[in-house]
Length: 352
Image (tube, rainbow, N blue to C red; front, side):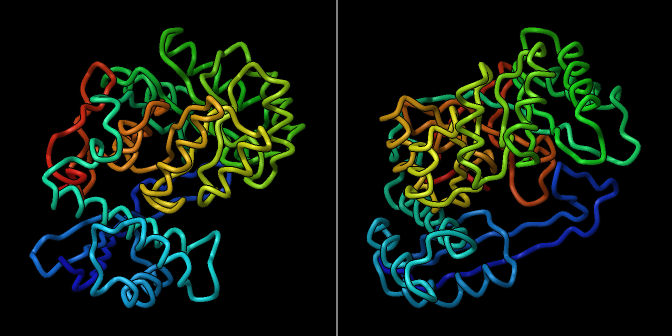
């Protein structure tokens, strides 16, 4: 079997009726896309991905030249070929690795279809179901604390046993954010896990101050409290807080994860397979984390995230965006009212 062509399709759904934001970024539009890897035997591997100009140039340019004519089942070989064949030397971080991630994921989908096996089994097959949490709680124009509580309790009513909310927007005070967290805790009750996500909003001292303010709300984890490259600040928080620090979604490759873990800057490792180098690289990172007795909770797409978490012994939980259940591009994962995603036996990634 040989790769014959790579195709990238992008779709825009235009502006959102209600834009939303976290501590650093405002989202005003929606859209997405998919990558397809075609073969001479008619099998096609697919991965959900963006289709912007830089990614399009990487995938349909240098990566396509490196992959066409190759055996798609040699995923490790193809990963190294793409990595060493970057536009300028090996590229350790950034959009090139992001683009490689989509190609690698599509290759895994293709491999599963070729072998008539689900990827989560081929990659390890440790867990038949994985715990899921609902990620929401964004800031919106006119959104009150009562609205926030109503939103997150609706996720609990849908079956989620863990929910996540945003903090850290400079448009509100630390005290107000702490009150938002406490209000949500009171609304969802003591038995639902509550994640707090600052999206790299603060320096270490400010993050520590905020953590002290909301400790009584018993958060499950404190996500990305400091800048992505502030390992010193992250390590300080890991040492001083009882609340677990979760981080890593902005890191790339096993080498970036190594630096994060060696710095002891996170208790829960969140590298995103859609960003860090694909499923292949994520599995290497998970193995390194396991050697340090650290759990993996990947950021991002629940379809890919659940596959990765199910594959390994230190897979903790999978991120889900409730809006994804109304995704116009692909069908949702098999999430059930007991709070778990149940893994499919369909070949490949079972994405439609």
